[in-house]
Image (cartoon, rainbow, N blue to C red; front, side, top):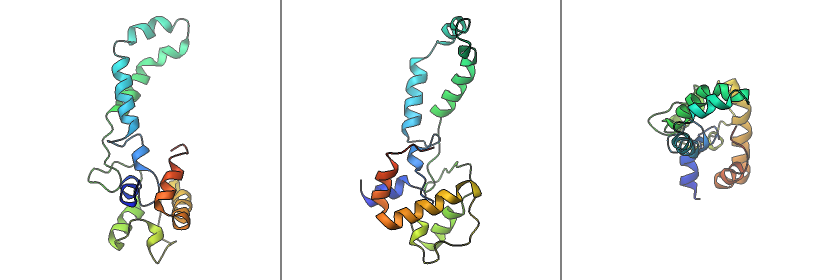
Length: 147
C-alpha cells in the first residue's frame, strides 16, 4: 500500500470509504452479491424453517437488506458519485485548500462545522494520521471494525 492508494481509500475525515457498505468497489458489495446469488430461491426454505426458528420469518427483510448492499454505488468521498449520508465539510474544504486530509491544513483543527456524528472520529483520525502517517494509519484502521 502506498500513499496514493491510501488517499483513494480514505475520506478526508479519515473514515475508510473502501470498507463502507455503500462503496461500489468494496468487499461488502462483492460478498453481498455472492451471498444473494448463493441464496437464490431460499425464501421457500426460510418459510418452512420459520415454524421452528422464528428468525426466519424476517427472511424477506434480510433479502432486501442483502440486495441493497449488493447494489452499492458510492464512489467514495473523492469520486464523482458520493452517496455518503453525511454532508461533509471536510470533503469540500480539503478540495478548496488543495490538501488530501484536514491535518495537512495549517488551520487544523479548525472551527468549521463538522457533522456532530463524525466530528470526534474526524478529529482523532486526523490527529492519528498526523502522528504516524497516512499509510500507517490506513493499515492500522484496516485491522479494526469499520463501524
